[in-house]
Image (cartoon, rainbow, N blue to C red; front, top):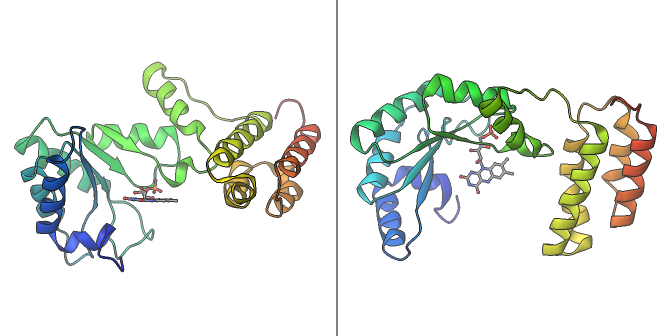
Length: 224
Ligand SMILES: Cc1cc2nc3c(=O)[nH]c(=O)nc-3n(C[C@H](O)[C@H](O)[C@H](O)COP(=O)(O)O)c2cc1C
């Protein structure tokens, strides 16, 4: 915001146009934009920002169906996603519209697709500590299979994998700190995990993470 980037751009559709135009003329890959409904409830301008992006040749648009002023409060307005899909379809049907906002399960993604007609969805908070949401959604949409629960073993295996992948990028120490918030998200809903969560938010090494996770799995009844 301080640098005029991100949602600050919602107040300057001309600038959105110029940025997309410049990027489109600088590279050969598809260019997408992500917008919100507008700055606040008295200035909903997603038609205008969409027009600017379309005029500049954008290839895909995602909308988080909240205003900037809302932050994460209230609920995302899915009806605006349906409206945007309709709006763009009438102007350039080749440009896909993706929806974002309040998708915490595969079922929610399916509902957004069905209720709004958007071409795709984006997960954000719902994927934190739950990267399974992508495969869960794929399985629900393509095979009608609903996954109700991921076992503790599966969760900690994935948690540790994410930790090591992150460590490859930023080093063990930083990754261990950065993973703390994700680690607690991974263990959300596991009744006997409170001790493990407390220990994980202080873990500084791969070894500590691995020991804590191994203990948790040992203490877990087989079916969970
Ligand atoms: C950790 C985190 C980082 C995010 N970073 C960005 C970003 O760089 N650009 C952006 O347009 N939205 C960003 N978002 C917003 C999300 O893409 C999404 O639109 C918003 O969280 C609403 O979706 P949700 O209710 O499923 O979380 C971020 C969200 C989270 C939780």
